[in-house]
Amino acid sequence: MSQPESSLMNRLVSLSKRRGFIFPASEIYGGLNGFWDFGPLGVQLKNNLRDAWWRAMVECPPMGLDGKPLSIVGIDTSIIQHPKTWEASGHVAGFSDLMVDCRETKARYRADHILVAEVRVRVKNNEQDSTLTEWLSTLDDEDAWETICKKAKKLFLKAGVVEKDIQVADRSTWKPLTDMPSGMGQAEVYGPDAKNKGTLTEPRAFNLMFHSYVGVFQSEDSKVYLRPETAQGIFLQYKNVLDTSRVKPPFGVAQVGKSFRNEVTPRNFIFRSREFEQMEMEFFVPPEDGMKWYEFWVAERMRWWEEQGVKKEHLFRHEIPDNERAFYSAATSDIEYLWPFTAPNFGELEGVAYRTDYDLTQHQKFSKVNLEYVDQENSRRYTPHVIEPASGLTRGVLLLLAESYQYDESRASPEWLKLKPSLAPIKAGVFPLVNKDGMPEVAEKLYLELRQNFTCQYDAKQSIGKRYARMDEAGTPFCITVDGDTLKDQNVTIRNRDTAQQERVALDHVKAYLAGKLV
Ligand code: ATP
Image 1: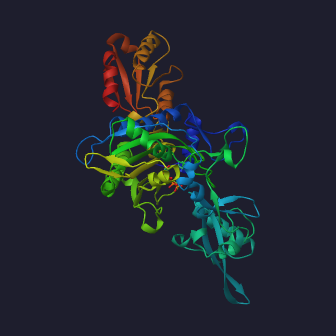
Image 2 (image 1 turned 45 degrees about the vertical axis):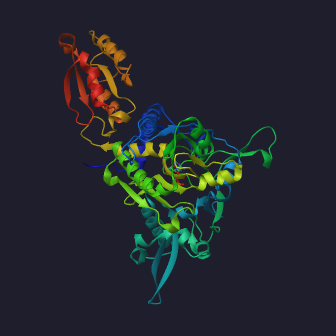
Image 3 (image 1 turned 60 degrees about the horizontal axis):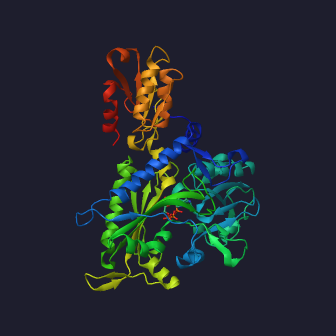
């Protein structure tokens, strides 16, 4: 099947815009980098993913290691918390990325997002060959390698070098700016958008938390932060939950909500944005059981993503080595996905971290409130250890779009989304074949009945083919058509999105039919 010219990411961005999944925020003012709005289909898809997570975590959690259902409760905490929260958690001192500025273009980049490639050219001088080396850079996105090759050609062709004498280093040897010797990276490299070399500054730490002020006076005393993760709100309320909910370790507290990070280089559509949503769960366990629960949650979370329709081979468990983990973490695995812009490599979708007792101990120290658990059965007290599966809800929506995207020129809409039916924004389209002869009345009646249980859309405009195409682009699994025969035999046609096959189903059986297919 021939594929269109433009990259998968470009097609996802344009389909999202055209069909109302995702729009640039503040678009009429030119947009705001790193901020996105979810349109009518997008918010429905996001809510469905959120609900599936909430159901699997809070309402119907998995069976635990002893074969009994786990005990996990939900919570919804404030975005703005006491500023000491972020001192205790380490975010004020350490939640930063290394960034570099370009003196020529005034652009700012995350240092580890700049990829540097060595380009060598053979220069013939008085019949003697010599080699000249330059270091070119670009941002590590989908087209990075093509960009580097183009830049190399342009730079040297302009200097009169013959094309065959230009040799761009092998793709596997290029490296992030942060891996270049300090000083050399700055003096020798052409910045991603610069015409001259040596215009990048030394990397500097840049705190990612947005801040504001509470009350009328703006001073250091009234400074507050927008949460960069939802997790800390859970730790602050852990004691209240314990005292009010009849839970005891092992138990979990789950939360879904907005987080904010002033990312240096937000990009790849909604993958890395400055305002996003997270789905996080803190699982509190007796210290000696930490490792086994960590293994449990890594496996469980990989299984859950597969259950949402992600192919097994598109997921990868990346065990973070000792020297790259946060100092307080005893083990961390990133669950990675084969993103269109990282392929053939994988990139983070969710992190599962064994955080030990670090957070509770820190809050205990800063608040001076005892956060130990009193285990009366075994007459002991301890600070629970914590396993945290933390995933991005908005990043998850991008995954669903990328994973479900199909291209087939033989269909009425070559682009269509093969979403898991239960996650699809619209479950069924209900159409009269033509907008007359008694068909609209029957179709409307069916629509009014079905919408009590399923998100449905009634559509009587345009040809039936165009209506199917619109529904395919939205990922709608079923289209139900009332035609001339319906009035005689009380049957409707149900078209299956994935097979494009149609079957006749009795009008009074449509509800049960959908219920059976939408699991
Ligand atoms: P990264 O390495 O990609 O910056 P992280 O390791 O800092 O991510 P965590 O702090 O572990 O991310 O956050 C948990 C999850 O929240 C991530 O796996 C990701 O799905 C999501 N997430 C984090 N930052 C962003 C962002 N800027 N935009 C969208 N989602 C994000």
